[in-house]
Image 1 (cartoon, rainbow, N blue to C red):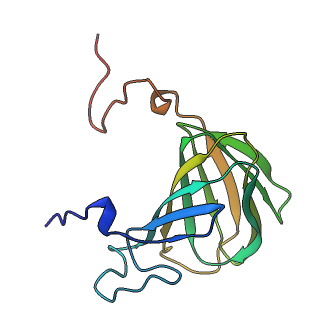
Image 2 (cartoon, rainbow, N blue to C red):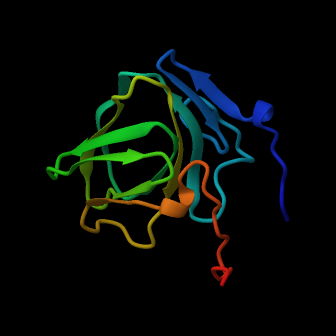
Amino acid sequence: MIERRPFADLGGADHGWLKARHHFSFANYYDPKKMGWGPIRVWNDDEIAPQSGFPPHPHADMEIITYVRQGAITHQDSLGNKGRTEAGDVQVMSAGSGIRHAEYNLEDDVTKIFQIWIMPKTEGGPPAWGRQALPEGRPGRKVRHLGQRPAG
């Protein structure tokens, strides 16, 4: 069953540099009826102010997907990975047995992201990071839905 959750009714926080809306219980927002959906534990709709971001912090045993909706996010982690993911593209971090990372908006404008955390089927795997350009997901481009074939 699909449950409609108006954006204004989502949990959230305003830290000045970060405006976050939480689709499920997260951080200081707690609702025991909204603890996740299947393996999805977190779905946040974040706005990150220019020249700010998340300083280095640890994670373990979580798959973290970041879809950049506007602007860009710059990643750096304890494995030596560094990269910039821009609007319409996605980055994935497998926290596995443990990783420290930072995510910054080094742009001159607000960056908007969806951040989705998925609980892995097994714990303690190797940590990893990667990003993927999704040309169809770029602003102004029509996105083909899963299962559709290209015209022509």
